[in-house]
Length: 115
Image (cartoon, rainbow, N blue to C red; front, side, top):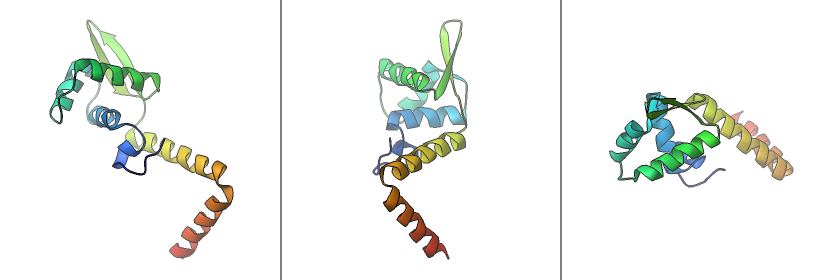
């Protein structure tokens, strides 16, 4: 999914998902509790909300979860660069599939304006 409105990573995933991914790309693995504490610096969130989003990110394949003792630790499955490249590739393919003629013309215009 791509959102025209939004900022950076939140164009491809929800804002809370983006915030969690950014935290984990900067420092991982982290337990859910530490992720929630870092998110609280921006806004107050229920621990169940954070756990739900972490679970969804695991289901989507963006995070890996490992249990140690009574804590669940999370880490990204890919680098930020790879994550963004994948989403951009998917967006371009979707646009090309849905609007082949317009897509081709847009690329041609882009190439002409770069010459």
